[in-house]
Image (cartoon, rainbow, N blue to C red):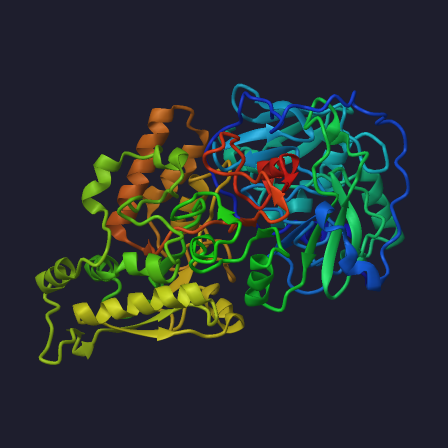
Length: 631
């Protein structure tokens, strides 16, 4: 029997972890340059038919002065333009992240700005409005917002995208159904989001509701109905439908892809040139992404000026301008060059610990002995703040998150690393003394643990080699083990990891309207421990009842002082129990630009408040409206 549409919807929205922090802004999104006097255009007129795709021989002949080229996003030939599918392999067009959806083609109600933690209206008109007890949230759709076929974007499109006119099961796999009970079109322009409630009648998590507003694309109801009808409601067929007829609301639409390149073309009838939004069209006519064999090939093209925006990690990126004199820059002129949002972390296996790892003194000794400055210098080539500059906690380095805990209260628990003497004294004090061979023993056996990460993840491998080197200095043998990712992920995501996974690396959440709550949940909650397969967090198996109490209280607490006190307590618990320890700070997206052709990209000192998120995610799309040709 064929699967029908509802089961597809159940699995369709991608598994993104939600992050946390600030509430919505009272400001409306200002254009990055003064609005053009366009008069709004004839937005009711049907658009002209799209241009025919170029012949393969013409594909490299895009006008360079009209094309913005990217690297580091697309790997391999896409399967189509179907924004409802998770199988398109088309990252230039689609990416639904909690730090802001990628919005050149399909748009979200709001855009998240990682710089100020605010939500800026996109399809939405004005700020989202909560009722008094945060059980219902309402927002309007901009009157000017139109689909590429000229029809208006409506609240019915939002509700249908949520899942067949509000069937919340449609996004259960997306992590939002636990916090959202329903999405309803009150009328053509008004969207009502009903929060899921606890048994006490409280909203489960208002922070997750806000994240949904910036993470999820809105799709046209009529087009989705056509997609269902032409595939007979068959889930697999709908998943693989290439959607060459996709109806979209953003400034760019499908143009061409093959085995070498992906191209999007500007919709010159885009509604966003209305004075209620950007007031003009984005500068590039084409967005293009060559499909490079590897990072090295993409880096060569970037240095040569064939790529304008690079999302590759480029070791010692500063050498491109300091030594080679290239017109290349990053958001910050000096290290760390970009904004670090996530914290790649080493987890201790606490579900199936080898003798010694159940002792917090052993975990602390290992953690404080690691030379983090060396990790940041070698693995990250200084593209991370140090732990002296941003002391370790549960917060990323952004000012908004750093303000959410009392550093003075936990300062005695923080460490910067390479504290070998202190680590040795701690281990000696609990009777784990070194033998004549320099190694410590427990229960008559040498203290020996594996440190693991996926093979080929070079910055992670370099970090874990430095962790392993710290072991010898404190008499604990730490042996590296770097399996291929397809092996690594099958073990790390299953509870009760085998013996080769004593200390292992995984990622953390980065930024979103739900931070730092979501990252703390990711690192410490015990709700994942009974899952047969766990991709969501706390891979070491830590459990603490007080952590669960605080995680439940924070989303429904309205007092800033009380929230700060609870976050401070969580940091204190984390730095006391040490179930894991972060090795570095890292950008969610790397962002370097070559200004051989285009200039005007966001910089930390320009006062524009546009985040360095490759001109595509969340409020970073504002960059496309500020670009100018060089000369």
